Length: 232
Ligand code: ADP
Ligand code: ADP
Image (cartoon, rainbow, N blue to C red; front, side, top):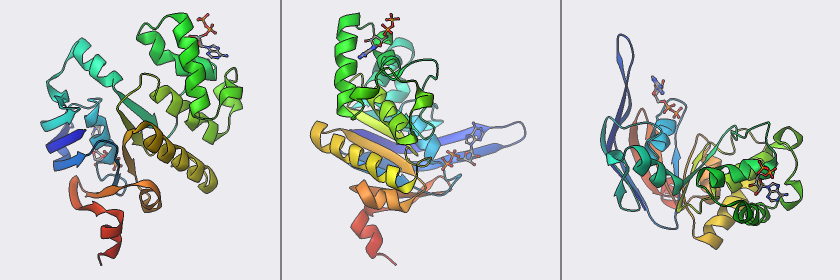
């Protein structure tokens, strides 16, 4: 589903080059929840942004559904990106738009007719348990509700893959549990493939099938959660 081969990402700064990813390879299988865990600065965010080409890799291959994302440009890249949902630590909702309007945004961009948008938005809000907050504004919601909106928006285009960038890091422990339960539920009910990054081993233990540990741009360990736990 997601194949990353020998991925390298350098950031050029004025007088030096930062190597954020140094030969990362991993495969996320269809229907799997795969976690990448590591400390701040390890390269997690760069890695996940290279999957949907928010960052362009310096070298290496990123295939999603068999398609090499690094070869795509322009309209082709935008179309491929629609098949990849993403959720964020700080939700990235538009504060001047209601919950329903936020969720409708990707559908508008894709040119869904109004009726169909409304139907689809209602379906998505039901999926994340927010059907009664369609007309609320983000400022009126709790953190957990905001992330539910983020998840509904990410799933609007029926992506095969969901990328999660520290999606529970701004939430309290109880809310974190409820968002992780929702992600697990979506994984099981829709067969949604999830690649998530986090600095919290607890998150990984809670929902990931397999894990890779990233340190200074390299994968230093990988396996099932049980395998990692049994190592010294
Ligand atoms: P993480 O998400 O694990 O905290 P990042 O991917 O954000 O790690 O960062 C990895 C490394 O790349 C860090 O050394 C960071 O300072 C550097 N980095 C990230 N983004 C940029 C950028 N836009 N320009 C220069 N350096 C960057
Ligand atoms: P506009 O008149 O600019 O289309 P609307 O407020 O009518 O703005 O709606 C924007 C989008 O939000 C529409 O695409 C619609 O599908 C969706 N939407 C608005 N309110 C609801 C609602 N209560 N339930 C479901 N979808 C809604």
